[in-house]
Image: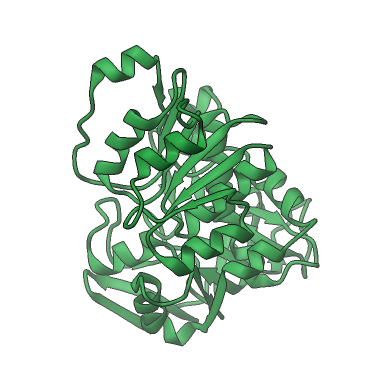
Length: 337
């Protein structure tokens, strides 16, 4: 089968690999149809992801069609349209016992710690695939994984009806977080310098849109919230300075979620954090979010579709380049196999 394999940092190839076979009765083989590109994939390709090992078939935002099933498979049949839940966990460590397998002590992620789905076929246990309704395209189905990330971060922040939420960064995850917040009854402020993405945030429910290059973010947020500050700040750009600013901006009893993967240390005033009794929540991957996300979005796929720019899988290098280009009018590059 054909696959996109990172042999080492900055060495990515369209290669021929053996087609995987079902080895265990509870496994399913899926013919991959679409895969969304994530910043993680680009980081592995460039050698900046510290978790990946090489060589590695990348890709974890994956959708396809069930081609064959093992003898013990009971919930999926040949022809089902499915999306991959790309995490594997032990079920025994402290995190797993606390129903937080997304941070399992022995966590492995498809496309990072083990081979992923930027290939023609993938074999995995039945429970790693979630069936999606037929009204989803394969490209739309592939984006259910990033939408579960949005569901996770808003769950971690405890977003409630009537909350005022500030999201810094309107890249794919910022837009998805905004959409999720609106579905929970919150008001949303988006801060984003890129005009295209800032305008895109209207579709995803942003009630207020700020250009931090031409407006003072703190002043504008105080105006919008009448001096209260946002109850939740989701930092989706990965800039350490904006995490520090989030703690300054958030309301009393507020919650901050640094959603981006910034490697640099973050400094903040512990006095400010204590004075407000604010909380900082990490958020990684997702826990049991696929079913509710699929159910919610199946009712209206307009926003999912708006994110997608499709590319033939063989054009992955162009897709990687466009995905990282802030001037390209692209939210989610999706490879079509």
